[in-house]
Amino acid sequence: MKNTLIKVDRVATVEEALNLERLGTDIITVSLEENPTFDDNRLIELKQARLIRNSLSSAKLAGDFHTNFSELEVIQVVDEIGLNYVQHSWREKTSYEFMKALEMKNVGTIYSDFIVNLDSDGCYLVTETIKEEDLFNGSYYQVDLLGYANAWETLKELCPQYPGALQLKDLHEVSRKYPLSLILDYSPENFAEIFDYLPNIKAAAFVISDNHLSTNSHCFRYTQIVDIISKINYNTKK
Image (cartoon, helix red, strand yellow):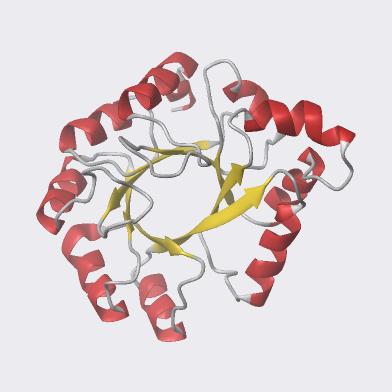
């Protein structure tokens, strides 16, 4: 657990970023493009992203992109803001030249939107996707375990009764091969247990949402995330 990073997506203000950094958050992600799955006001302008970047002293900054920015424009934003990571869906194809340019700038790539349903062995699909799509150079592969609101208890207690469902050993095996950032129904009570079971997961990812349009994803209000991180006292790893 001590080696697991904390990642928080859709941070929108300097105040939020500084408070999360103070609590031990390692990667802060800002939304630079509209995401149709959210109906809130967490899209920020480049000026605000620069203010957040300049306010941070230890946390890394990731910019979340979708389809409106060209590769050249993403590179320009990386330079303008000083991003440490570019985050985008694994479905969005990128050129070798683009990935090489990020590598030369020492900017990592976070592939998001790996959706794993507990009712099937989705981790096998994640593994095959990474292989087939040539996504080997990703800094992190962000996976959301869907299917149930109490996904962790379901994965731990119910899934073993159904051999065709996702199993803990499947997730453990994928996390041994690839650096996973895991979105899950975290709480102060289950956090340590999750990473005792899954010690190879690289990052615990939280997604802030003031109004998420899908009830099938694990999102939290900002205050909930602060409460969880505060209670697990994660900054003791520093």
